[in-house]
Image (tube, rainbow, N blue to C red; front, top):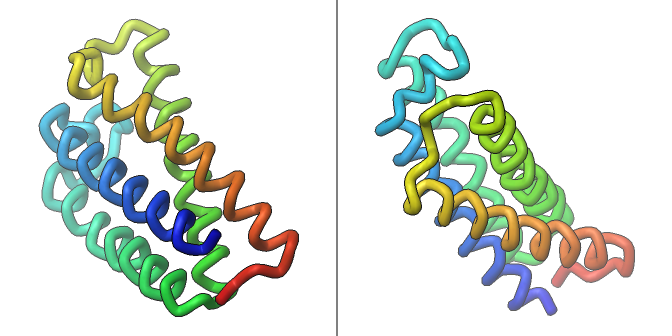
Amino acid sequence: MLNWLIALYLINATLLIVHEIDSAYWQEWKLFKLPGGPVLFVFLHVPLVLVVLLGLVLLVWGTFAGLVISAILGLGGISAFIIHMSFIARGSQEFKTATSLSVLYATLVVSLAQLSMTVWAIATGISA
């Protein structure tokens, strides 16, 4: 079971990182009205990517912290989908390409599976 969760984590982390690359293309800092432009946007991703990679290592090691970060990553993917779909629903032109939408929908599907499996692992006490 843990091997499946690790695989889902890796796929979801990849999708979310690809989404963030796409976000740079769409200049997401403008969409969210973040100060600092692309410089701050890039630097904000350093700790985020570090936590994502750390979570994968901790999950491979079979730690509870790895499961917690897995749950957070799953919630993050679901949140990314909801947030971007709400921008699109309000008329935003960003993220409407087939590539962007494919990444967002794939992220939603994988995030739901990952979060479900993570919650089940926590509830049943599965770690290592």
